[in-house]
Image 1 (cartoon, rainbow, N blue to C red):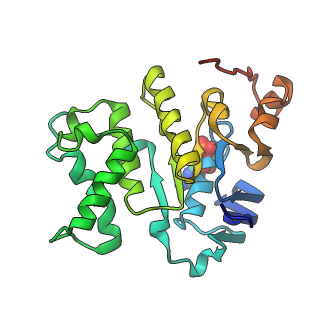
Image 2: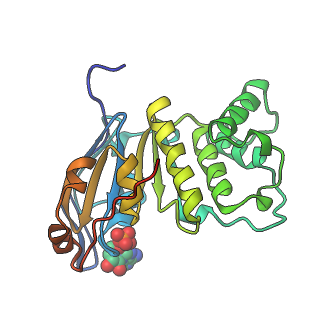
Length: 255
Ligand code: ADP
């Protein structure tokens, strides 16, 4: 493995306001290669805004951003950063595209419109489908899959361009408890076996802290940025202070 730690994301003194409402204040935040970072915090704490800044969708009022050690202003390797949004999970029954076709869309960003799909592209698509455990469904219509399976398809679509970092925004919303566990198992596997760096935005701190290596807790400022074990060791009182309302520390046990 790599001896030197390499930062995948680094934010220095980043601040952001919508009009005169300050949402982010002096954020210093980093994700090193191989981390599984859980980003948590109360509603309205600025998580989505931070993700938009990292994806280059909005510019901070001040501060610097580095992606894969390059200043965001000159960063070009956008296909190395995958993004799966909460709203991805919205295909209806009968939607006329197969799993294979949806995952193949992840390649078009890289090689342009696919008039001719070469064998190596087809293999990449099937490999990504295999990585999320959906090989048996490759030629099924996506609309006929469960919410949890559809979310896996979107992960596969992000994986097909071989990202170094995968950002997931509330990916477990609308997925039932049992499938949420399987979903976290998949993320854990991608993190450990494929050395994929993950940034997961979630309000589901219980299940997340079992699998994430690191946690950042955001409410305008970063109240916590460290190892997952250290976060779970924080007292309920301290977390309630950060959140502004009582928080129970729940650690799910499962074997
Ligand atoms: P989170 O994702 O943690 O819930 P957000 O980044 O979505 O937090 O929002 C942070 C704050 O910024 C909230 O108070 C929200 O109302 C406000 N906000 C978000 N988007 C906008 C916008 N486009 N214009 C004005 N205020 C916004």
